[in-house]
Length: 129
Image (cartoon, rainbow, N blue to C red; front, side):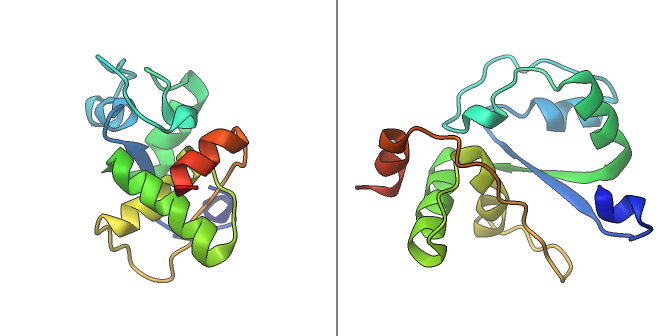
């Protein structure tokens, strides 16, 4: 969003667990819609309904929502730990998961990988240690 505010024509693609989908459904409907059921390992992306401010920004700025599966999110967490030595929570790894599932945005691509707000034991379980 900051790039767009500076005049860039950067495309913003959101990533959300398939076990939630509330943002994708809300953007498609043009209004906030609650998910019927939320099941995901990505706690930070588990809000059953998009927040008012976040939805307003997404409605104006997000061009697409990539829905990703939990096993791919876990694989993204493991890959970031193994290859980049980064401790990223499941929600923060969702953008990489979208690429792993085949999303192919126009280059250059910037992934916002956020959050080490995960219990060490849960992180170790995700990375398989």
